[in-house]
Length: 370
Image (cartoon, rainbow, N blue to C red; front, side, top):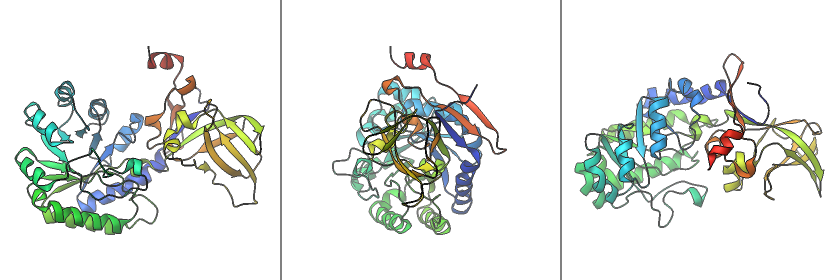
């Protein structure tokens, strides 16, 4: 298969750097790690990731099935609201099933009895720079908060999940919130066998105090005799993948605008949702050094703009533009808006060779709907 732009390029060496951090935290803290498929489910690299992780966690029946079939090991299945048909199917794929509410737990307990069963806790504390992603925002539907209600459910439970972070690189904030959770739910935690602390922790960020993080996890687990789980998504795949594009036109309207053969609306939609600018490779230089272009996508959406960047050389039709960090919450959200060509998927192996693994064509577009 010929590799033509646009395509997502996953770099195994960069992936290994993140996974080695995870492996170290596993060894020192005793915590287990589950890949969050809601963030990254590109299964062509699961054989590689499986060496470092204990399994997968999901947010739907289909993700749970994918984790079971393509990743193996432990399969945790959570959903905000299961249907009975889904529950009957998901128990074929998952060893651990987590409910979002007391009503769902009581309704479906008989269907999944014998599995490892958990409940989601809404702890009332969180860390999130975005209200859209804050799991304990006012009137949140995510999890059970009342300690007494949770205590009443204890006979039905083996564990719980408490997802309360989003892009949290502040270890002191994490430690304080963990202490608050211990104080509020200590009686419940003492009666459980396992607890998932969810995802959203940036422990693979440069200069993150990993050893301190390990001590916090180990101390908490020993205090309540719990097997801890973490559910990394972004932390597992951050800075590992590029969206590689080609400039197809350059127009001038108050600025130099380079149009590439991809779309932020279709191919990096999380940036549009959170009103963030993409990052280009190589990174732009300081002001006054290089050539400034606004880089835009080729969909009909007026705001289909990756950002404004400084490039070391002038862009021309045919120039390559690479966008960094195109793995987490990016590949899983790509879509067929405008019927634009879907980026192919390729893997750069540790020996430097590049393997194209998937190409999308008109048939994929055709069968996306009916």
